[in-house]
Length: 74
Ligand code: SF4
Image 1: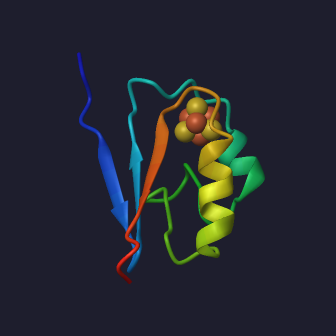
Image 2: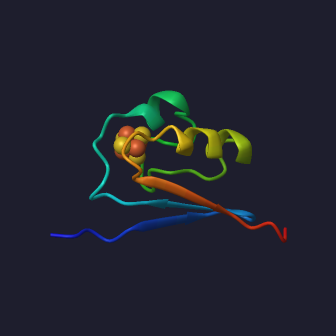
């Protein structure tokens, strides 16, 4: 069954997480634990790191479950 894509937002950044694609490698939780913590709800804390650090970590997601969108107008 398809699970809904989760969206997390800050002032100028949107992160999307597709649970169906996630292979639970924990790359994100190990790489930036202040933002990605599967033990917490919500598990992505947009205030836990700098925008560039969050983007860099999202780019390392091996499955493509994480994606981002930057609001260039902010
Ligand atoms: S890095 Fe990507 S695939 Fe790995 S746990 Fe995080 S979201 Fe899932």
